[in-house]
Image (cartoon, rainbow, N blue to C red; front, side):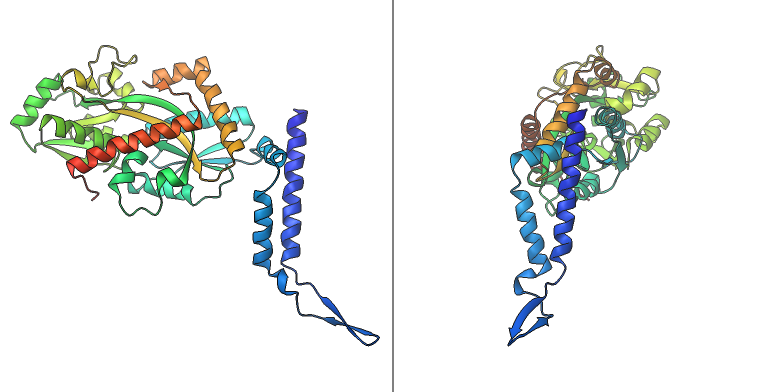
Length: 372
């Protein structure tokens, strides 16, 4: 506790020095010029004191701070609330998971980690908000499969995800579940394929929009089975599941976080999970791959930050997130949501993002998928 107080004092003192220097930079200096025995004051500022140049010089100096100052800065973090940007509406699986981890970090680090929903653009609006945020650790992004898929699907994004977002920590992995309305005649994956082939274009498939995991899971299924389904995009899990339960759409590849309670309650019929192995949360369900050889899709979540965020801050967040994933109560809660903890380093999370980006680039290009 004493160490933390000292670190905060160093941090605040450093901030004060920076502010004072910036004020001085913005104030023109006056120059004395001799004229015989008379010294007149020239009001013209010295050439080298342009505020912007002064600021850039200070910024360069700050970037070259010794390691001890960087460590002190990280030790004092966070000194105010932190935003977690979730690029989907409230109520879905991503929102639930972000709030769960935000509560853990708030309790561990003594500042609030607040979820801010920024839906739209298949997640690109929220992602860009984080890309444009200051790299100070006070704006984080809940990273999902959609980010890896959008990197290829959208050719004219205002950012490059792998370049502009620093991986902080992976959180959880989970399968998608192929679910249908209980009134649907198919009770197994082979029965569904047979029904879909007998009724081409008459099955409506709910998704969370082009490029999302729910959409791409269905596209991969269509590509590998030869069935024809019509995608119906929604702006969130809640409205999509509402329409699926009411029979407005017939099938959805939904993450377990959003769907598992509906499955247990009997309001949805689960046909299979999309992961390579069966899910501990739904052990009686087969995998899609048991009927469609080679099919595998998994959902995953993690935290990212704007590029150039101090490595010490990234490591601090990674350490606390991994501590949460090792906590027995947290692990039990993730299991209830149908997921498995994914502890690891920032570099390991970065590799997962890169591998998933490469995988989905092949699917998107092969299937010729284009954004609307």
